[in-house]
Image (cartoon, rainbow, N blue to C red; front, side, top):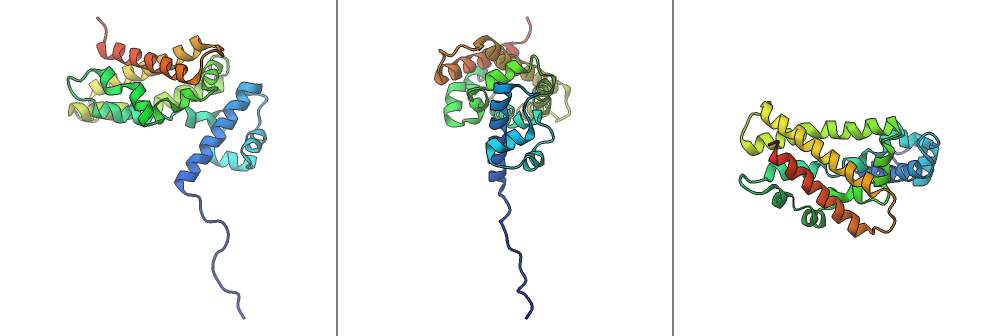
Length: 215
């Protein structure tokens, strides 16, 4: 008798589960980078920390430095969404209201709120591979910001003005996160809630400064 046909084995992973695995890998890689440095960290160690093989790690990320990208890109979508919904005449700090939005949607401050992401940003000063990933995340976010600003203003997607505005907002956001991370340094006295509030203030200051333009 012929064997019954049909495929057996594990069902394919859902997109939600794949995103969870990417985030688990990112957190494990980050903890290892902070604890022992990038050069001393291997794909095998990252996989072991998550309970998967190094081969699986490389299915999700091309390099060990790129493993941290999910932590760095967590809030970009929400920022673009907020820019799109920013009403004409509405103060920017009201539109972003970082503390309230963070409470409603953890994407906004999720990455910097992680216990060692500030240390990761500080590592970008001395680790060229991490610096490249850090800058690339902002480079990739900028077109989404430009599209959101163009949509808000009713301008064509290829208009130069929203592209320039997006570049200003993008640079302001990066400067705020770096300023927060580098000035927070290793102050272990600061609890998570205070760190989130400090970061929210830095982000608000950065965006309102960018919105005000140059006098």
